[in-house]
Image 1 (cartoon, rainbow, N blue to C red):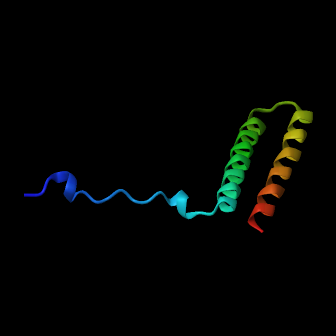
Image 2 (spheres, rainbow, N blue to C red):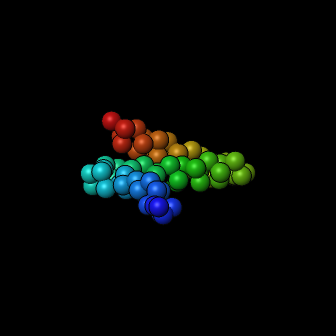
Length: 72
C-alpha cells in the first residue's frame, strides 16, 4: 500500500526560476513603484496642506510615468 506522502502531488516548480533575470528585475521595480504609489495616495487623502498636496501630486505623476515606461 502506498503512503499518503507518495500520493500527494509534487510541489509545483518555482515560477520565478522560469523567468529571466531581466523580467524579475522589471517585476521588482514595478512592485516598488506600485507600493510607493499606494503610500502617496494614502498621504494625499490625509493631507491638509496645499503645498504638500501639490508635491504629492507631482510625485504621483512621476510614479505613473515610471510605470508607463516599464510597460512599454
